[in-house]
Image (cartoon, rainbow, N blue to C red; front, side, top):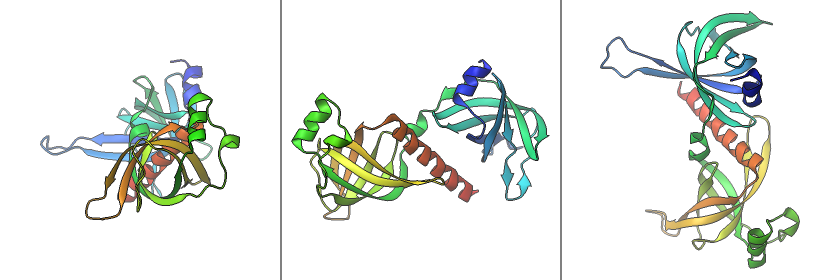
Length: 246
C-alpha cells in the first residue's frame, strides 16, 4: 500500500483502538483481551504509522516491541481495521509514540455499521403523506418538499445502527409504513438533529407491557455523511463503555 493510499483513509488525529490479546501461562485459561484508546500521530509510509502511546489514568501503557495487535481506526471516511506490529518506540514534541508496521491490508470495518447499539434516545416521528412517498420514489425527497408543521409522535429509540433503528412507543404504526424519524445525537464535539426516512419492517407488542409496541425500522433515505456520523457516534459510545468497564 502506498503512502498516498493509506493517507487517503487514515490521517493524523484519527482515533484508533488497539486491541491487545495476551496469552495466559496456563493454555486452558482464556486469553486476556484489552482494548486501548489512542490516536494516530502520523502516517510515515504506506505500511508504517505512528500512534500516540496509550495511557491509563496517568500511566503509559508500554506495549512490547515485536507484539502484534488489531487496530480499529475511526476516520471521517468510516471505520477501518488492520493487523499491525510494534517495531519501535519514539518521542516527538512531548508525545510518546508507538511505531507500528501494518502486516495486513487495511479493510473497511463493516461490523460497526450494522452493530445495534443499545440506548435510550427520545425520538419524534410521523408517517409520510402519500404525496411525499411518491416524491421519494420518483424524484428523491428534499427539505423543501417536506410538509412542514405536521404533528410528530414521541417514542424512545432502544437501539440504533448505521442501517436502522428500533423504537418503543405507546402506539403502533402499520408494517411497511414510511416514517420521518427525528432524533438528536450528542458527541464530544456537538449535538446534532437528524431527520431520516425509514420503513417499518415489523411491529410487535412489548412482552409484559400491554399497550406498548416495538418497531423495527430500516433507513430508506439517509445522507451518506449522516450515516457515517451515526456509525461514529456508535463507535464513540462503545469506546466509552469499554473504558468504563476497564
